[in-house]
Image (cartoon, rainbow, N blue to C red; front, side, top):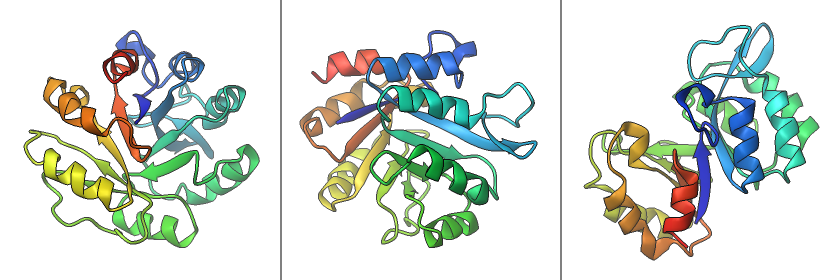
Length: 207
């Protein structure tokens, strides 16, 4: 199992998606999940609509390079980013092994696939049909309201050969104990990722 820190390794709500949270994650050996948009012709980091105060994606990637290029889960929050990202990805050496894009709209996802980006598709209790299954390297496995479906789904996805990134329930303000207990038996699998708000606790739990 690989652990990625949701919006960085933050200590307060205000630190989410900041360079301080990213550096703390990278320096502790974690990859990150973060949100990318465009503002004034540049790729920026922001979950909400962007403004001039948002960190530049390139500033995050400078830290990422410094700490050995750990895993990046890049949540695409705006359409039309693919041209901006192409030059950035080439400059910083993002490859299939160290990043994936997810959550773009279906038309945009199709464009990303055609242009050779590394894409994860989605699965949740609201998405019975998984789009772009064959073209996707992995699956972003979410659970918005409950976790009942996840036991069979994790097993099927992991044995299919896809990489599976599980959204830990605390991201949706729910207790994570049942899901973490379920994932224990898969913790030695290299194609499993856990995206969590509490990376240090997850590391200790799954040792």
